Length: 430
Image (tube, rainbow, N blue to C red; front, side, top):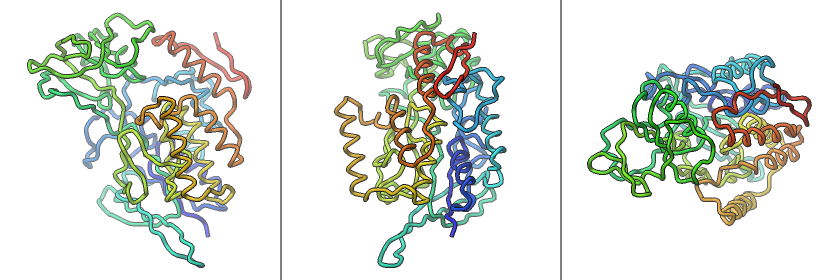
């Protein structure tokens, strides 16, 4: 009998899961893809609205109008589906959305997507089969836009709902005293309304830096507040760096860690996102879901207690589409029986050992899902075990070159264009 797979989310990860399931119809039934909104693309689908949809659910996308990719298309692409060659390397978000729409059409995924459908619950049902062996099936309860609710059973579930939709807002003492506007970058769309205003941006990672540069260009006075060593890269006029915000005083002024105090019109949190899976009961799955960590996940993919539930793309600071591509193929190799897992206890011990090694290296608990340099060996390992082609070496070498360029030219690195010569070589196009 063909295995039934549910996919939660029709963003890049969900489309990738559906594409690979549809290429194995001798083993799997066509997938059922549940999508909260009326479009594919997930976070790449720009929505000018902020707040909530008409159905009361929070707006999912965190995309802002002028966002351009910080990775070149030559690195970003699914390895088996290139971007159109005439496009420049660093793309506006609209081109990534168009790419995902082409991917969806090319693999005929759309007929398998249920749009405007909310997944309410995903829960395991453990059944005893012959010889007292147990087998898990998954009950997925969803409701469509008319409010019609139904429950269906699946052999496995791929969670592809992303982790850029539930804003992480740190607690700042006295924030109720602030007299200006407070927002998270999740609700930021364009810079013009902030022209001429003083804006304190909290957080100097990708979006904090990017948005600060946008704001400065329209004449905002930006204070980039962060706890990292001062950025040495050239910042445009209109941006000054400061230590972290520690409180808002009674008069509404912002107090910084170095003791300085400053008034501001806007406080913008570029402080990342929380993991949130309202359709899962973490305790039932043997998982702990905190703001920044989901654990234990064997090979960053599945809870050892229920290894037919897969979290695709949960790691941070990765090359996303290639990473999804590797994870999906590994998960399907498990489901089709070509890869076998160690016993649950062994998986849990392995996760714990890896986490302890990271903590010993000085990694904070909340950063345990950040991969960075570990991503290459991780993808190689998945490919080797499951027997699918590994990522070409150019993905890593070009990714690392772009990181170097970004540190030197945070404003201008996107002007560069690259071309893949072979799996092992790329070149800069003048």
